[in-house]
Length: 282
Image (cartoon, rainbow, N blue to C red; front, side, top):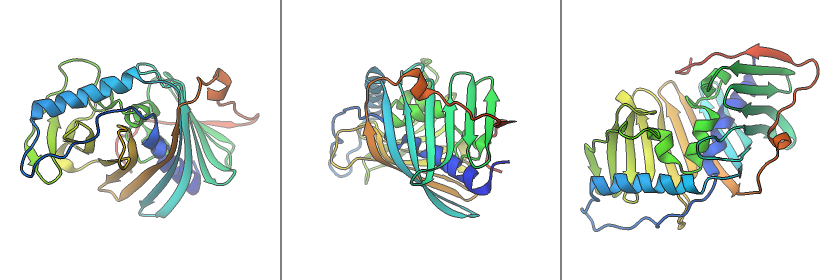
């Protein structure tokens, strides 16, 4: 089993991944007159337009972020480095390192289209899953998503993340209008992440909560006085007492990474252990 510290580090750390990627450009959020709300259709169109722009600008990314988390066992803060070549439809492979302190690597993670691999140096053990995307909860990460999912979120490809690339699978219904924040909430059905999605006037996600309000909740904040459409902060919480904050420190767009830079070689004698999917925290 993963040590208490290593597992927590990895879990909340991966999380952090996202916070930062690219910086797609978009029209800065506009102030609406008090009591004036944007038309639901226009907001949803801007949501899709922002996503299409991010997909068009997808490419290599590298993120430096801080992940702070708290659960029933205590709290922790780690540094996370997340990188990949970022193709919109095929972001693999993706790499993530979680550091408990300067030079202290708690875990190294690699995900491709068929395999999830997480190496924990302190245990000299590699946790693997073969055969499709793996929910990060399986590795003790408080996120019901894969690294590929989070790469979409952090690079501003929101439609692919929340809805899907298949037309007609999203059915937004705006039951709530918040004049104070100039935002609208949409209920999503038959999509990747069913639930309630709150968008601001410019179509950028402010929050998402699982159907029924009994599961995961995510809140997103953006860069101050900036036209970036990628997250600056991501807060995640679950009724079972899990909370996490990903703070993006630096986002860069380097040249394409080589295969060796995206590889995760294992030291001789590494013990391999299986992982299984998990939908809810234990």
